[in-house]
Amino acid sequence: MKKVFILLFAIVLTTGLTLGQDVMPAAKTGSKSLNFTFGGLGTFGVAPTGPLGGIGVSYFLNSDAAVRAGLQLGIASTSTPASASPGTDGSTSSLTFGVAADYLMYMNAGRVRPYMGGGLLFQTQTSDVKPVLNGTGTQDEVKGGTPTTFGLRGIMGAEFFVYSELSFSAEYQLNLVSITSTSDLTHSNPSSTQKGGSATNILGFGGGGVTLHIYF
Image (tube, rainbow, N blue to C red; front, side, top):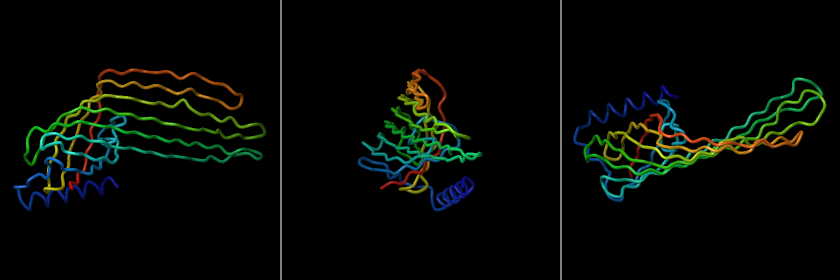
């Protein structure tokens, strides 16, 4: 899939360059764009509109400034059969949800548009684990122990317009501050609760990503 995207990107870019150099970006007051981000250059924490991948939308306040919002949603579940009989199968399920909002300022109105800005992010994750039970007894179900993160980040990037309504951007993000709290971990057998903790990170390298923008 990654090779297909790289090939498609190369074809679109080459075609855009061939058809002409005088592309007028569609970014102006009231313009909107759908943003599709592809990861692979790093990890950006939650960054729904950035490197981890996801879908977002931008709205231009004017030709030099835009607000951007994005969403990430991940659902996973697995089952593990017991290897002995009698036995109880195990299972694992998780749900990850993230949102982010950014403010971006563009340096010029040309075909290549460097930009910088800042953004807020939120991510939460829940999980439910039932270990495999080989033999008799009551299965222990484990819930919680998963993180919730709030963060503030700095953003730098550049957007290149292939056509007036189609562009690609490369972006790097810097973690300014992030606060992560972990929920309590609970066991059903025997019934017990382990208190969660919290952590604060100030400054740190973020990650990079490539985004396809479609303007309308």
